[in-house]
Amino acid sequence: MTNTLLSAFGARIGLSDLKFDATGVCQLRIDGLKLALYDNRALGCLTLLGELPMPAADTLRHDAWVRFVLAGQFGALHEQAPIVGLNPQTDALVAMRHLPPENLSLVRLTDAFAGFVEWLAAWSRESSAIEQSAFAAL
Image (tube, rainbow, N blue to C red):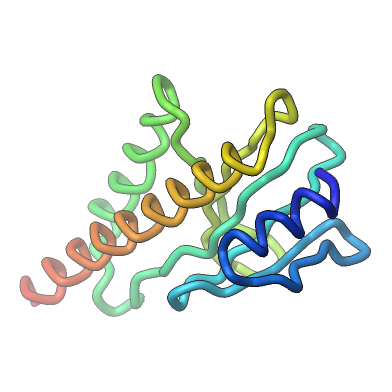
């Protein structure tokens, strides 16, 4: 992805100073979400990244949480759903969505980014509901 497209995207969402750093990452925070766009040279694509909330260990219903995470991954079988992984360097749970370079335009990037943010919000709501039900069961 070029800095030109990133700059146009930033202008579209009201953040005119977006740039990739030396590692190809552009970090931003929107509505309390930690997000990044990654110029993924290894895969030849743009990767959207978003940090996900982790449940508090004392309210965690392990089986329900694992089921929630793994069932969500199965959605990628038939739709362009983000995948979820644990960042081994930070222990943060991270959602990722790869955008192939074919037909990557400002409109496509904007739409994909909006859908990604909506997906992150839905994840947070569902995750919170699991945590609340575990807390209520105590």
